[in-house]
Length: 252
Ligand code: ADE
Image 1 (tube, rainbow, N blue to C red):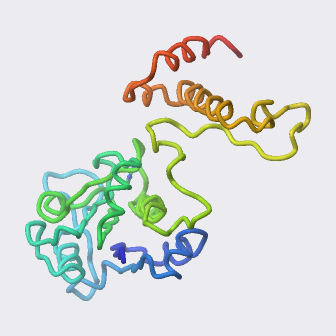
Image 2: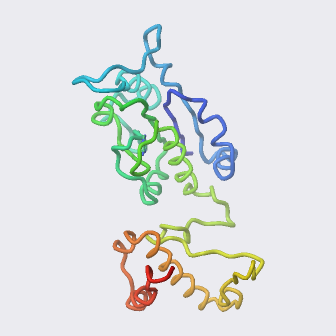
Image 3: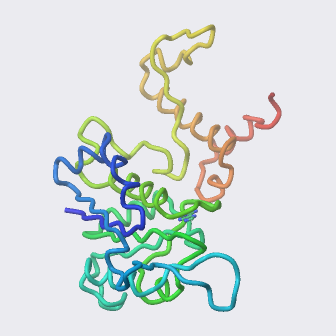
């Protein structure tokens, strides 16, 4: 079973967020366990201080290393990264991290324990990233007021990839990013909605034609919304010709 331990100064933030959908079901079925921990529980002084001013000057407060190291030691048994078990990941959420993607989600889904450290204030003392964590992860190139929302996003993306979490009726294989492309467009009834029609091929039931339509539509959407992804995958000559025909940017 994969166990998440979230270290935060706002444990209440997570009170309901894991009680829905696939994450709730994975917890109920004991595929995963999620525990949230108040960082202030590992402070020593009366004021339960977790932050302090930055050396060198500047605005804002910095999360102190002592409570973070103490929390991770209690939760993993390791005093620093070199003592961690191979199956344990200790992740610092911060805008300075490497950018989270589906590949990293898949890698993390194979762990036995994932400790998520939510940064706050202006930053976290660098010795946490230097000596304690296996990963420093950002969810994108923008600054949040803390790592809590980012931690919730990691949990969601990782849990979906734990075997059994999606159930037999759905699978992660055809989703966006699974082959380096965005997902193809989906339609359901009615076939004509306010004059906008579902493509005829999808109504026809010819599986080969449907598969080809979907591949082409996925390429078209990726070219339009995420052209950066196309540079990282190998396309067939036919697919390159399709993309040349799309003329994206020409239409309104
Ligand atoms: N904390 C603040 N901004 C963040 C981001 N973009 N990703 C992860 N943690 C963060």
